[in-house]
Figure 1: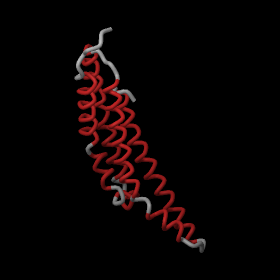
Figure 2 (figure 1 turned 180 degrees about the vertical axis):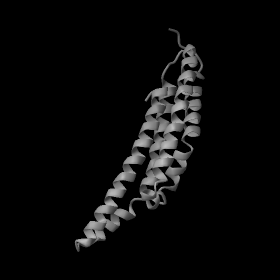
Figure 3 (figure 1 turned 90 degrees about the horizontal axis):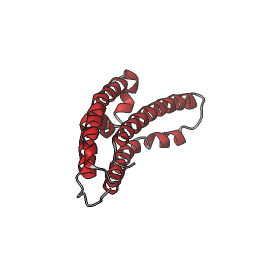
Amino acid sequence: MRGSIQDLAAILGLLFGMGITIYIVIMVMNGFTTGWVAAGHDPTPLNQAHAAYGLFDGAMVLVLTFLIAIIVIGAFYVYAHPIFLVPYIMGLLVLMLVVPQFSNIWTIFSSNAAFAEINSMFPIFNKIMDNLPTLILMIGILVGAVLYGKPQSRTL
């Protein structure tokens, strides 16, 4: 990750993909637990696994924080000529047309009645996904400021 628009798209894809994956895995595990208990097995190990689901909410925030830090640090160490600021802004604008669609898809996905119980386990992640366009725009502005705001002491 070197502080580019592609990195912001990667953050978008990772957050969306991890969220969908975790929701589906938890739904499958809930069904598995129901079958496990109905078969007469001891539910203690599965109950311990269910208790750990809440950790994913904090883990998502941690992953997002590290991704932002990596992108900003990468942007600082990469030399970018100021002439590329205009394409960067244009790319950010195009990305900002796509990001709200992912946020809307997430809202539709997570508001499904089948995921009501799972939604209550991830309040922070749902807040991040609801505010995803603002978050990606702020990260894009920060990365652009770091990438193109450095003193231009290098020569080509």
